[in-house]
Amino acid sequence: MTGFLEGLLWKRGRDNGQFLQRKFVLSEKEGILKYFTKMEQGREPKSVIRICDINATFQPHKIGNQNGLQITHLKDGITRNIFVFHQEGKVIVDWFNAIRAARFHYLQVAFPGAQDQDLVKKLTRTYAIEGYMEKSGPRPHEGFKRRWCTLDTMDRRLMYFKDPLDAFPKGEVFIGSIDSGYSVHTELPLGTQNARFPHGLTICTPERNFLFACESPSHLKEWVAALEDVIKRPMCPQDYAVEARFVHKR
Figure 1 (cartoon, helix red, strand yellow):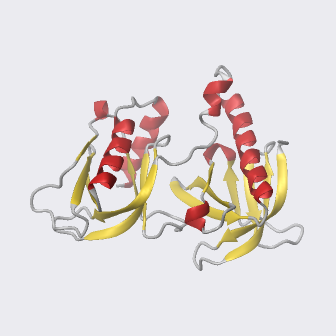
Figure 2 (figure 1 turned 30 degrees about the horizontal axis):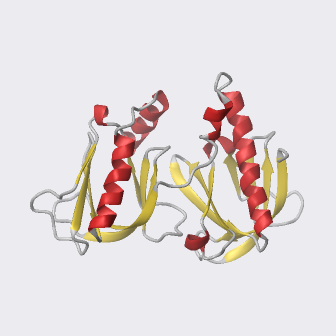
């Protein structure tokens, strides 16, 4: 793929949920992906996304289109989801590959001593697990609410949304390592208000505990296994910087 790609994609509106055509431009030289709501020349882009902060993953079932693509990036330190599709499968694959190619070039510059095979692992990723859980708030006896949850193992983030196609999460949990005081348990603290989902899950962090509930034993097992994979993995220097930002936001 070349370092530049331009074209029209159908993008889901952040607030109204409608898919409308938007002009997207990917520039490897500038290190950005941007899109426009107006097609006229000279218009300012609606959003500018840095290649270093971007991920892309195919999401046909979530979006409801066989050519659906989810583009995720960080906006002011918070995860932002953009959902797009194109009528032609080849076009959406071209966009996916162009984003990966731009990411590869960025990583080669950012990590000049790294092996190509190691950089390839960091280009884009699918999420380890997604699905509905119930979540309780931080106050005692606070009720559980149904949330769509997504675990990004590379960025060590558990995100929870009101709806799978929400642009921004209701909240995020940083998942550190066991050496830093993080753990996951298959029960809820005594006195916790009952959830409609019967299978409890507690994520313990140095700052506070996060309470979730799964619908079935199999779902609980899948979530615990995915979370434990992250918790068992040692943290790198970049992870500690992200953790500090999460603690600051709480």
